[in-house]
Every structure is written in C-alpha cells, then in structure tokens.
Image 1 (tube, protein in one colour):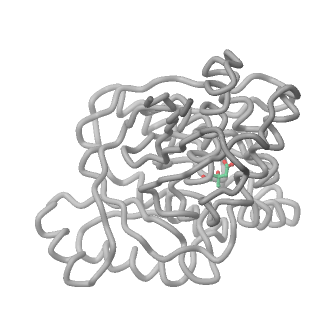
Image 2 (tube, rainbow, N blue to C red):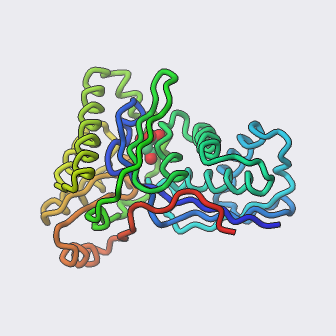
Length: 307
Ligand code: MEV
C-alpha cells in the first residue's frame, strides 16, 4: 500500500509575531504544496534534507498513537515550496506526514486531530509557535486565526478570497540564517525587556489585521496596510538590511512590500509579500533586478489525501 498525502504552504498577510501574543492574523494557504509518499519499507528515507523534521514528526505521532510502527515505513518527500523562507514549509511537511500516517495506519484522525498533532510537531521544532502555520496548511483557503490565550480555544474563521489578493507577489529576499523558533525567541527577548512598547506594537499589528479583515469582507482594498505592517515588523527587529533595501526600492517604485513570516536579520528575511498597482511594470522591474519572484494563487486547498 502507498498513501500520497499533501498540504500547501502558507503566506501571512498580516499578524506574524503579534499572533504569538494573542493578536489576530490573516493568513492564506498558497498553491505550492509538499507531497509525501508513505509506503512500506526499510527506514532509509530518501528525504535526507528533511530528516530531522521527519524524525520529530514521527516521534510526536508515536506518542499520540503508540501502536503505530513508524520503523516499518518509508517516507519520501516532494515539495515545490522554498524551504525555511516564511512560506510554511515545515508545517506543510509536518501536516502531510501526520495526515499520511493517519491514512496509512487507518487511525481515523479527522482534520482537527491532524491539526492538533501537526501543532505538537511544530512545537517540538519551533518552541512556542502560535499555531497559525499548521492551521493555515491543514484547513487551507484564507483565514483569520487568533491564538487562544490562557487555555482558551484558538479562533478560526474562513474568509472569502478577494480577487485583488491574486495580484500579490512573493519575492525572495534570501533565506534567513535564523530559524522561526530563533526569531520568535528574539522577539520574546525584546518583549521581556520592553513589555509596554512591544505590547503596543503587537496591538497595532492586530488592528491592521482587523482592518484588513473588514476590508476584505466589504470588498474594499487599500494596500497601505502592507507598509504599515512592515514598519511595525522592523520595530520588532525581524527585518534584515537586505530586505529593508528591497522594500525601500519597491516603495520608491510606487509599490508596497513586507516580510511575511518569521523574518531574519543576519542575512535574508525570507519571502516578501508585495503589491504594485501596475503588474506589468513591476514584473519588468523585478526581472531587471534579477530577483526570484512568483505570483501564486492565494487560497490553496488545505491538507488532503491525493492517492
Ligand atoms: C511564522 O510563520 C509566524 C510567526 O508568527 C510564528 C508563529 O506564529 O508561530 C512568526
């Protein structure tokens, strides 16, 4: 028997980092996906690049379903997502494995359980994630996500994908040297030093997410939230010099851009989300600069069994 299980990547439109502290995030699944093949065999994974993550996910699954013999299966991975660049590659891989193993061993886990187990795996890898990444890739579409604080349940709301969101560009500012967990940890250090100031930044990011949700629900779109959100992410200290320079150049050209994930400061800051009213002019500019960029349809399908 062979199971093919897949999950999309995600892009955070607004609310990264602040979402860890209970503010809402607006997040979408993308079309790019990770696909895993679960089959019988010796444990000699061809997916070396992903070995640590696979081991962590398998150990969480073994805790949740002690009868499952994960040493009797082989997991192969195929992905179109850039790894470790803010597009949810780790959540996408974890969800594909959790869902794939549930199907392979007939565990009968529903989407909610798959999301919960994927979150546990994300926690093992990243420390203190909010749950936004796993929720986005398991459920898909466009969502408002709010982490339940002090033991409350997370709030999850489906939003309709406004067509203007298909004009969003994703631009590679370079792979971050830091992991998501490290970036979340750096923000935590700032928060401990300056709780009042940081809480204010988080609240302002949360209010951008609320306004964006309102606009999307009322068929309105003004790209100003992108720049405002970016300035606040810079205040949080998650945007590196290279990304700041690209963003400043985009703004000079009449566009808008922000980091869209955990960010990074030592070198690259991962993928940037950008918008420009004139697609053709912007694409020509991106090409002339030699950037790696893509326009991916926002609102991809969540986790699923492919075969
Ligand atoms: C990472 O995609 C999003 C962060 O807000 C971390 C998290 O919410 O777990 C930076």
